[in-house]
Image (tube, rainbow, N blue to C red; front, side):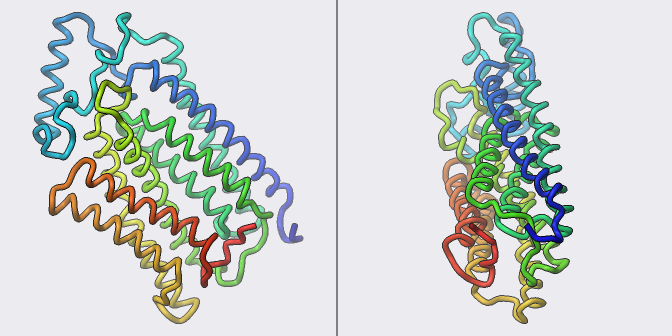
Length: 341
């Protein structure tokens, strides 16, 4: 390990990453139990009791549908879905009605473990940065760790604003797998970066790319659930709601990614004397931008909803993942300083 690296903090960072993986795995189990046996759809609403109350809920759901959604099929979703985007708790719930008490506790434990994992994850990033005295995303290992952190942060922020707890199991799984991949295949000892990365632009360009990528991952998870969800009763929300969650995340992420691409061009001009040079990383960043722009354009002008829009979104997501990981591993260029072991 280089002499200018704080070995104690670097070791602590590695240990916190391992703790984070464990916390996310246990949180995933808690979210899965809540999704399978809890109140359903993560909305946290009590189940209406009695035939009259059920009729009132149905009428209310129809009113919400009229206010918040177009008519059945207008958004590309299946007209057979239950109102308000769900399959209906009454179809999913056993005859006993209320979920078991341990299922409610599983939800609380899952949320708590997610928060603890987030804190440990943040601590791992901070201690890595302090150990080397720089922004802690100067190689592929640090970059993937930061993207996983951004994805979990996006989920926790969205969960605080709307009922998306159903995404918890899948986001936690994605974060745990991403961190496991980083530890197993991308980990490098903490140390200085190449001279090209010793710039304030790393705090601007790379940070923006990380934030946008975290939101794109959240949208990608929602899109995959859309395609895998069956037509019958399900503990997941309806396809229309999954489509809305993905769209909202992309609407926020796209301008951030646009800024990241522009900032990267400005950094390239400062470092290499040109804004654009057809480097593989530049090309694939632009391809991902075009793909997400096509998704937003299709929804805004052609009114696409549902499966067609989700397929475009997932193609864009594939381009993004290849740009973030594949380009650095399989292609060579001016950005090939990721220090992949």
